Amino acid sequence: MGAHGYLRYVALGDSQTEGVGDGDDLTGLRGWADRLAEHLARTGPEVRYANLAVRGRLAGEVRTGQLPAALELRPDLATVVAGVNDLLRPGFDADETAGHLEAVFAALTAQGARVATLTFPDVGRLTPLARPLAPRVHALNDRIRRAARRHGVTVAETAHHEVVTDPRLWSADRLHASPLGHARIAAAVADALALPGSDDTWTRPLPPLPVPTRLTAAAGELAWAGSFLGPWVARRVRGRSSGDGRIAKRPGLLPVERRGE
Image (cartoon, rainbow, N blue to C red; front, side):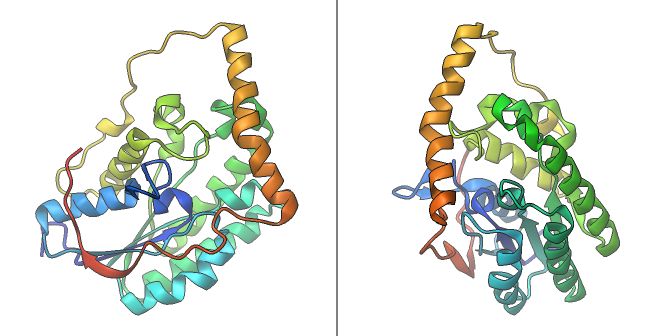
């Protein structure tokens, strides 16, 4: 067993935990949970890791569709990150969403797992069109913190740091982290868990970017709306999800392949 004391790590969640934005469906998705597992494997090569996350899943679907499988795997470490898909829906209810997450926290911690989660950045700082969502993000983060305290869940407070809304940490769709963003999320969770070899360097800002002109910024917003917002709205209208027909990429506990940065 490594210095961290974990042998079985199971990740639950949606597209961020699945790894969307870090690789692709042809080459394979990596993502922050894979990167966290690699961190664990550096001092514990016997670590086994499962990833049950599927893109598009709501918090309630994580509870009903992933929690039973996670409990069967009996993890000693689990990460639970969901809720963004809920807050993007018109009928978002922060209490209902957090209630599903708390049920997952309660079940895993009752079985003896160490559980970690994180708070979400204000997406309005990424794109002006998302500014109306800020109250929802704050409400969900507040409830996640309270639920985590009740169950002894570790919270990586990514919401507090300016760097998390640096556009270089996000993919072109502004919904999923870029490879650099996934690396920072993994580092944030490792830091919150106080894993060997972790520190707070993930909070440090990147070198400043040139300030775009108003014309450039406006053109960027229009391009984003046409390429990503429009198709997303169309799926919602049709009752479709990006995760339709998909299953977990790593449903069983397997050895961790250690990769370089």
